[in-house]
Structures are given as C-alpha cells and as structure tokens.
Length: 85
Image (cartoon, rainbow, N blue to C red; front, side, top):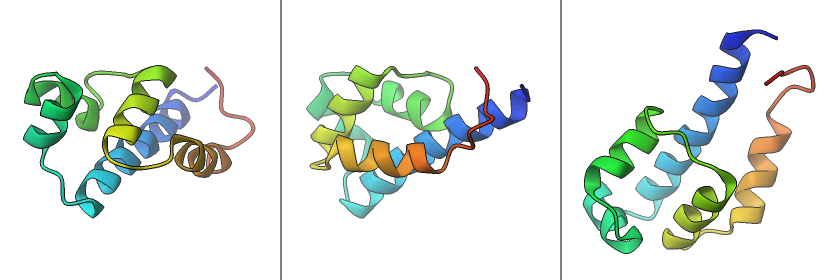
C-alpha cells in the first residue's frame, strides 16, 4: 500500500465536499451552523486535519442539499482497486 495513494483518495473526498459547498454558495460558517458545529470543524474537515466517517459524510452532504449516495458513488469510482488501507 502506498501511503500517498490513501492520502490522495481521502483528499478527493475533502475536495468534493468543499466543491459541493462552494457550488451551493454556502460559507463554512453557514455549514457549521447547519451542522451545529463550530466553523473550525468545517475548516478542519476540508483541510483533511479532521477525518470523517461515513455517517458524518452523509450528514454533511445532506446539510448542503446533496445526495450522499450519488457523491459517494462518484468518489468510490475514482479510487483505484489497489488502494490499501
């Protein structure tokens, strides 16, 4: 397993969340309010400092008005089969 492959795969998750937020014209402050979390939480998630699990991913995407199944499927398709954990 290449550590960079795992990092690249996770970076695609955080980039997709940030892109969705920007597409929806939602600030980090507004997303944090919707989540009931501080703005720093959103910043840490988007920068990869704070890793999220599948439940948190789902809640964040829904808070942005997105479909978690669609976004997850798109992201999963971009992860190479040989990516380790």
